[in-house]
Length: 81
Image 1 (spheres, rainbow, N blue to C red):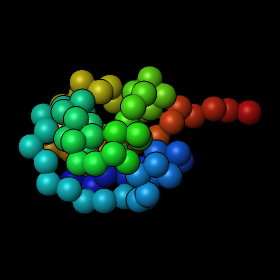
Image 2 (image 1 turned 60 degrees about the vertical axis):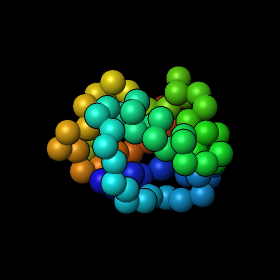
Image 3 (image 1 turned 120 degrees about the vertical axis):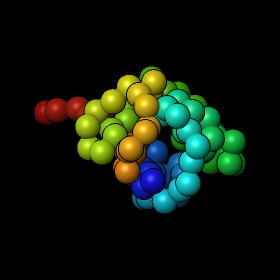
């Protein structure tokens, strides 16, 4: 599965993307797996209210299932102007 990080999420993790193998059933499970890796992931996922997620380029909730998903993207809320 490809994991993409945007804006300050990418800055905290230090990577724009990575490919991982996961047994996570939901986005929340995936976040917990990532947090368990090391401190930079803990920092990036410390405030989920400041994050949005897209699964295969479709906005989703953190309880969304990952079955069949090829790409997960994490990013801060978008603002317009």
